[in-house]
Length: 248
Ligand code: FPP
Image (tube, rainbow, N blue to C red):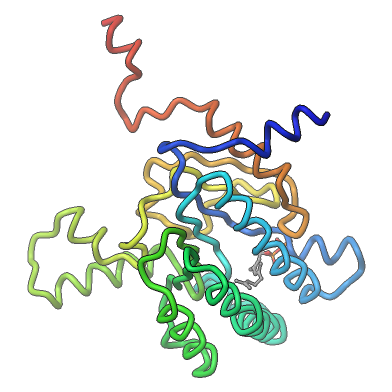
């Protein structure tokens, strides 16, 4: 047992896994199982973020993208939306700002249209982004984010720049994620096999790992499970493996 734990402590990813994204699903079910309000599930979910980021950073991941609130999540009851937004504000104000001050390798950016957020939250997001630019570790938080909305936004921006025939690069460079590489691995907790409008463009060749674990229960064991599954995959990016090419 000790041997395995020690091995996991020493584990390091390589260049195949520098960018990872997570669909943090299952907060509501976690709360329901405990007969708690859904907001308690979101609070428990928020509490998992920092330890997960720390482990991912320790093993050598440089870009982590978290799906916090989608363009569709506004359809939820008002009190739940308010609870999530309050939680995000509090988390930025109390946890993230302190972390950025303490640790000069950490930064946070927000993906999505900030204009519909409350002024207070929008300003907090901008403050957090401005505190740390170009740092070694980037945590992207998708907030009021939708993959389709992002592509439309990028195309409109290219049109505004006078481009009439678009290339892939014209779109990629105008996505909210233009500062981060496409995710090598996307983990979805909560057991659902859905993309949910997340990183539609960027996930063209990402590996997906779906875990039944609910987000508030997600920890180091689940990270290692997902990473092991990732390294068990053969990524071909539409081509052939080396051995298959040689066989021909
Ligand atoms: C999905 O679970 C989760 C959300 C829509 C909210 C995610 C928010 C957090 C983890 C906390 C706040 C974020 C930050 C950055 C501090 P669900 O509610 O759909 O769960 P269910 O499928 O079990 O109902």
